[in-house]
Length: 278
Image 1 (cartoon, one colour):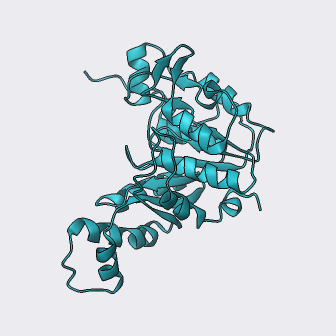
Image 2: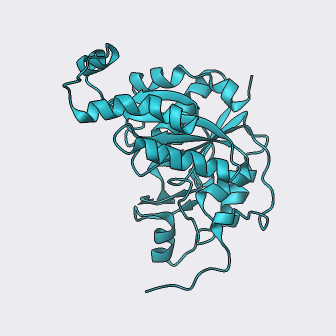
């Protein structure tokens, strides 16, 4: 069925209908696609800043795939983020809008016959003012993920005024995915802190051969794609490559654990400078 076009064009990024949000220091973490690991990255950054003595809060405006408990719907991602930041805020404040099915926010809202409550999202974010040194926001999906037909993740990012960290995979397609996200942010006037390549998986021996410039390279194409993607993301997008985070089996959102490899990669970045705390 073809639906009638909305009178409001979300691409125009009109956020004038919404009251301004408080100017907080922090970062807005988005992904380039599903399952790139932005929750893990956002939690790792929050954990690093908390370990450096900063009062850190986390925020995830909308979550799907939640579970039922006596208190209502609980977001596993919100639990993980809260644990990483050592936040004492109620999970319902960290993630004010929650749905049970693990589908896109707009699809979950349609199935629940309950639209995303943008007023609740904005009110919960406003409550962070004065409560922390910085906030790590995990945006739902990518910048183009719709929360309603006229309000997408990029609209919320623009309202917060936070710089965006784009989390990407490392395999084939990572260059175009990063270019699309970075260019969209620039077009929309959203500041971009940089890109993090996540779940980097190259066998150490293959990494050594590639570092030595072995030509012709006889390893797998997947390794070669991941190895070449990192510098090309910087070259083509002109965005800063903040970190290359390896796939770390010790890290798990479900178990609320951060492995040493993820922590080491994130610790190489001067986050206080990027957030504006120095």
